[in-house]
Length: 150
Image (cartoon, rainbow, N blue to C red; front, side, top):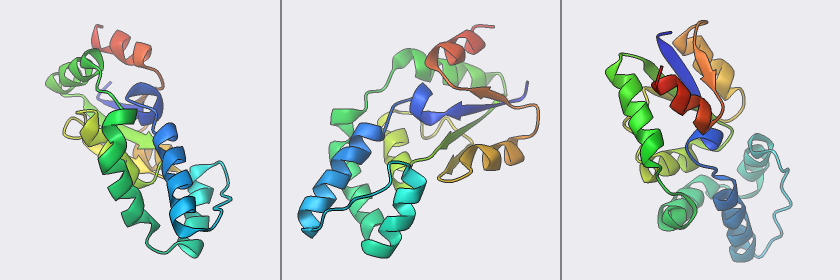
């Protein structure tokens, strides 16, 4: 195994609550109920139509509030460093918008540890196309920790 694809939400930190808080805040500030699809890639498409500068607003909101919602995990970051030291390419995938993912990765201390990050619709497929067919897909912290100790 020369590459690992990490489900960023399950392995590093769930950005769902931060996303939900932003949607609520954006609805209040825009004075419009943003009835968005629950699935974030569909929500992003709807926001592109209804709230043109939403990506900038999301990034600012996330930068200010990420420490409340996301906490780095020493064991996870140690496992990532161990895999990198073993010349394993690390990639991450998420359905979150890229702006939210970047802020989350920085907050979690993992931004510099990943070689590639794919966001939005088809993120896993895009990542696997880059990393190759033999890439291990990791969908839990426990699986990452076990892999790093092999």
